[in-house]
Image 1: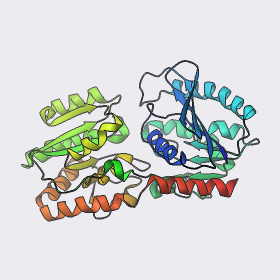
Image 2 (image 1 turned 180 degrees about the horizontal axis):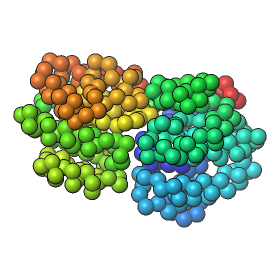
Image 3 (image 1 turned 135 degrees about the vertical axis):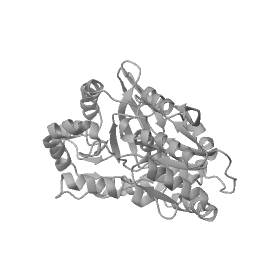
Image 4 (image 1 turned 90 degrees about the horizontal axis):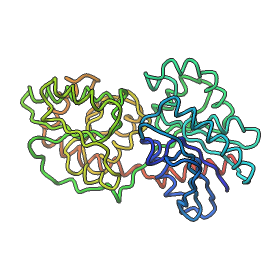
Length: 374
């Protein structure tokens, strides 16, 4: 099978969706009957081809970006225009059997425009689903008709969690949206769960510093924890446009000495970062399925999170789902730490839960979908 994949973000550009795509490709590198070209974005001018494996090529279309992990509308339009020309040329030069777009928009727009030439599937990832990102409320209204046409023309529309599938079906009730979850590489992230909790207790969150992640709730929760006599330290791994604002918040709350901004951490260093912490915390308003939460689970960290897409699949005896308020998050952290037996049980359960998810299974499910369509 010869497949063309499209994703407007791919490491080092973007966040979880690009990383998930990369992990799926690592699995597809072992499929002898697959030949894959990936059309994505790059940081160098022009078009550059990288050999990912014997059967996979990465074709990068150079664009100018101000921030690797945050897309301006002008940058999205620029990528669509530049990548569109390359996509048309690739269709002329190759006999692809199927297109696979990560994100219904903007990525899915390209195969939609050429659906008369090639069937395509869409992997919904989060912000491409109306209702997911508050910042894009007006855009969702303006683009709703186009979104419906893109989804309707697709041979299949897939979500990576039940929550995201439900959100998608609220937008298009008549559409079936099956689920193919994210995975985790247990060999990289697994860690024995027998280390002692130190003082202060180390909390970790891993995300882009954007409004949807609601990191302000976590920083304020640190203040409540300290006031309740629970000594904690919050480590924040990631960067984004809210960095300065969040630092000012920590300073204004008097917890700047208890909130550490680690910045962007290289993927190779992340397993050790997880292992150095005691509890993984997350307060996102929306997620597809959190890669970071899966990684933390594989490292044996119990979870304190607010409810969002993907949580139903991941939290089962290995954490606490709190209301989206600083006090509720702080109370969940305190309750977890005060019951040592429950804490240890949650740590072991996190590793067990993570073992249910693998990138091999994700790739196998997509492979069967490809076969059924072709």
